[in-house]
Amino acid sequence: MTIKLRLIISAFISSLVVILVIGVSFMTIQTVQIKGNLYEKIILSKDLLADILPPPEYILETRLVTYELLNSTPEQISTLKAKLDALKKDFTDRQSYWDQSNLESRMKNLVLKEIKNSALSYFDLTEKKFIPAIEKGNIQEARALLEGDLQKYYDIHRQYIDQLVIMANQQAEADENISNDALQKGFATMALTALIGIIILLAALGFTNTIILKNINRLKTIAASLASEQGDLSSRLPIESQDEIAQTSQNFNRLFDKFEQIVHLAQLEECKIKEAHTEINQHMAHSQLMISLTDLMSEGAIHGSTDIQQTMQTTIETLQNILQLNDKTSLVVKNVHQNTDQIIGAMEHIVERIDDTRKNADSVTHSTDEIAQVIALIKDISDQTNLLALNAAIEAARAGEHGRGFAVVADEVRKLAERTQKATAEVEATINILKQNAETMVESSESTEVYVKDSVLQVDLFRQALSELTDNADAIRQENLLISYDIFIELAKLDHIIFKLNAYNAIFHNEEKTTFRDHHQCRLGKWYEHGDGKKAFENVPSYALLASPHQNVHDKIYASLACIKNNNCVEKSEEILNNFKIVETKSKELFTILDHMVEEAKRG
Image 1: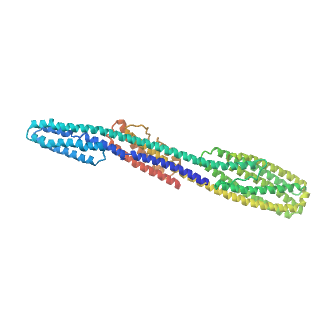
Image 2 (image 1 turned 120 degrees about the horizontal axis):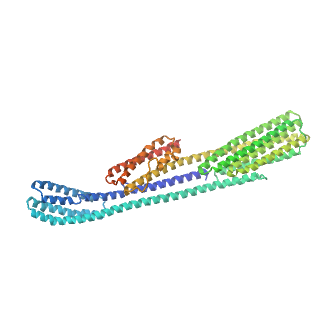
Image 3 (image 1 turned 135 degrees about the vertical axis):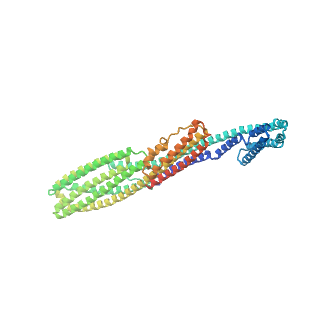
């Protein structure tokens, strides 16, 4: 599994955790929201109480009308009879309504049987006996009915009404408790889901981090071996996976093979040079120039290595998370890519200088030719040594915080330069032997040129591998950036949902248990006005549209919560309902704008 795929899987797990938390929150809200099942039950209980006090379900007004009939004039009787008919019609209509409702069975049975029967008995006795007695002017009979059977039916009816009031209040309280329990369980489930998701994510990130550090430690071991006094070039990186680090290890192994060949050749050439004992007279100035250039190249390599070491130390100290690691890795690889280009240019320049040296040797006497070849070999050894130092710097860069071992490699470069100077002095003393070995030196120069060209090819292959690694690192960074946008927005939505839920809960309980801040001081407001939201999205077109719906949501919720302090939420119920309808509309608009912000940020 590649590093890129591991990071993508980690990011996917992060998104899945966010989606699960949002899903649990949504399910909880659906359960206890206005117009939900529990809310409907509460409203039914409230409606029932409204029907009881005052009529039509409670025949208190009917009782009063019968008293009015007892003391009415003939002109008032017809009006009061019509009023009784209207009251009876209202009663029967509401009976039909409750018959079709989902009212709790015990209360429904009480309404449709006991309360109904006692009320209808009262209406029937009033119509059949009480009103005829009033119309005939038989006040004594009417009074006896009013204080006798009608009083009995009314008392029975009132007993059932009292029972119903108690049952309705108990049912409303139970439904509200169920709503609160559902809300608490929803929050607990949401917290548990988030915790499990975070644990899974941390485990995945820890596993990926372990794999990366394991391979980096291997690179560190090889670098330490190369930087030692022995300079062991036989060490190779193990290949145990198919990821980017494994591919880079393969390229390093190929490069080590070529280095080992070049060093072996350089050692052979050094032995040949030490055997030359003839003094060089005609090209002393040229030899001195070559030595000076070699010193300058060595100093430049040391200075460059120090700068690279300081840069890598600074980079290691600033690594805080995976995104930063990707950014720093990409930067270092790009620098190595540029250094590789410089190495290729230097090696091509070496080839040109070797070729120039050979041509100059052919144009002078046999002895001058031999001297030029010896100088070319000296330069070649110095350049190859410098190449070893530069590639050791590459190893140090890949080794992370252990790049300080590069100082040992730089010291080795200086030693090689000193040996080169010594060899030059010996060449000056052994010019006669160098003349005898002219043909051998020319062949060695040509062989060195072939090896250098082959090295250029290998370094170019290494550069191509670095280019691919750079592209992969950039792709991973872009994927993480896009995923971070999604997480930013989903967290903002979740925070907004919790804000609304607290407002609903405050209205339900007629109590503000949470401090409600304005649209500037809430977490969403701080996020998009001053925090990460502003940094990530302030340049997208939809960003400017976010403030208006967000402010509307806060304004309407503040207006609704004012009833708690004024203790008039019941009187303001219609206004509160309209406010929350606007809140939901503006919330949908807000979420749409947030989604558009993500899409626009991804399009870039």
